[in-house]
Length: 215
Image 1 (cartoon, one colour):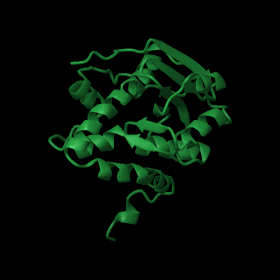
Image 2 (cartoon, rainbow, N blue to C red):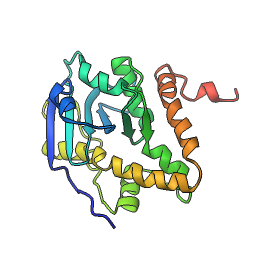
Image 3 (cartoon, rainbow, N blue to C red):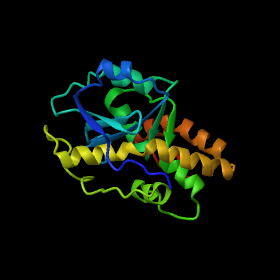
């Protein structure tokens, strides 16, 4: 089995936006993205962190403190660029949080959790920790998942946890794409990904479940 990095070679920390030099230095057609918030309610809990990885070796952490005005033109341009694939795990939450924060619809989405549910129908376990273990042979820690992401200075443990959540997504996409193609479910996955921006907006407007219900 191919050996994958257990931790990034470098973690860059930024305030409020992705620096222009990051976009200039990276020639890419995909980026792995995750977010951290004060909680799991996108209409209540503020965005605290966006983490990105372009090449599975370097991670960029964009920190937003309580007094942030979320003026992030470079990050927004990246998220709205239809030519760049944005790889998430459980994209539904992340893009809803980004919509609630910036008022934008993220373009060109790939969700490893949806891909896993469509491809790995032999199991009900589709968490990032599980699929990293099965598909890549990597054990990741979720210890810092419920820590305080709103404080101004993150701990080194939080930074490493945040980086690990995006470090492996490109490789997971490759593995899951192989499985989706084998099971003839790639087209279905693509259509699910296309619907995610609308589902995220429905979540923010309170229609996440009821609009599809019989009653």
